[in-house]
Image 1 (cartoon, helix red, strand yellow):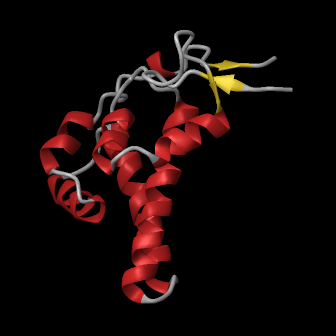
Image 2 (cartoon, one colour):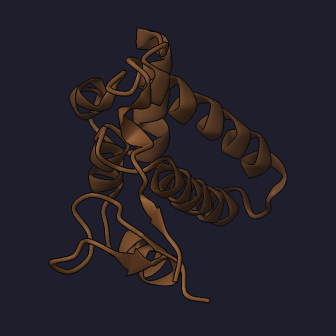
Length: 132
């Protein structure tokens, strides 16, 4: 069974790609591009979860390089998840925005643009997943 989904802005003319293709595409994006995608209400929840995991993997890799191990980066990964969730929900404080900006190396203004676009509720879950 081949399962695909349509994360807005990715894929061919049909806008449907496999999850593996999408994960590969995420690796080619900048942190700023990924944050913009998180703020896009047309991006499916499944795609947003994958974007969050990609950002977390990048943080863990950066933390392991800088700290020489995974001890501290695990806590940062949890912080990143929480902050990204708050960003998507629109409940993130200005202090948390600054912290997230520092963690990801993304401008606070970019985070502000992505903030809270999903707070209204259900537009993101519009039958984005297709089975075959």
